[in-house]
View 1 (tube, helix red, strand yellow):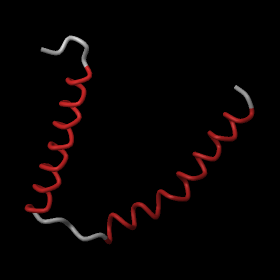
View 2 (spheres, rainbow, N blue to C red):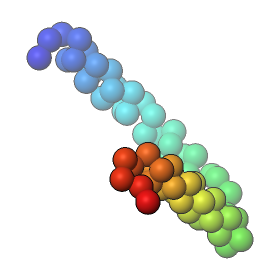
View 3 (tube, one colour):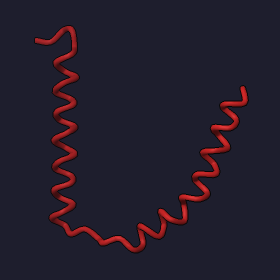
View 4 (cartoon, helix red, strand yellow):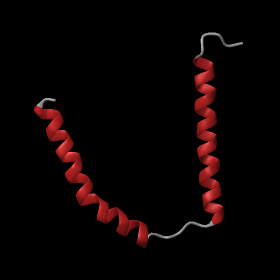
Length: 64
């Protein structure tokens, strides 16, 4: 390993040490979503996944 990879690994470790407590605090103090909000999120994610699948299918060389 060269020194750039070592320094990058150290930087990522230090960053995780400093950000972990703040992330926990944000999760504890954040507002909980309602069932309808989560349903909208899931539907949007499914729509994006379907669109990506459609694009991937269109890029396949043996499409019908």
